Image (cartoon, rainbow, N blue to C red; front, side):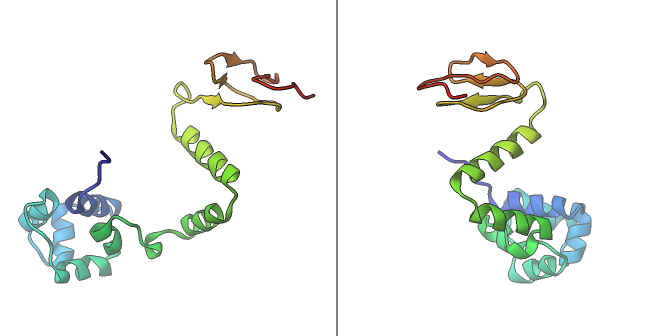
Length: 148
């Protein structure tokens, strides 16, 4: 079962993205700190006036309500990245995701797993589908004919 983030969690996340405390966010929205806490705890639901006030302060209301980020809430480089990703072939999308995931992992956790034939040079800690480390700068034959 997939975990979904609730409205109250998205509201808290958006407040944190704006870098504001509960009292500051409540002040912008015209509510008390206690009311803000009730919204973020899921004990009370915000009304349209509250949502309009925080939207005017830069909150992504579409994300808070639906869980889907609004394009207006994305920075220019995020929009460009998304547009480029959507236009890319599947192999490029997979490589981009791999690069982003490996860039966010610590160096000791980062590894690449190769499935299928490999006929290219690889650098770094590369592990084939059997868990065998492939030496840097070497080609690894994992099936089929080895090409040079």
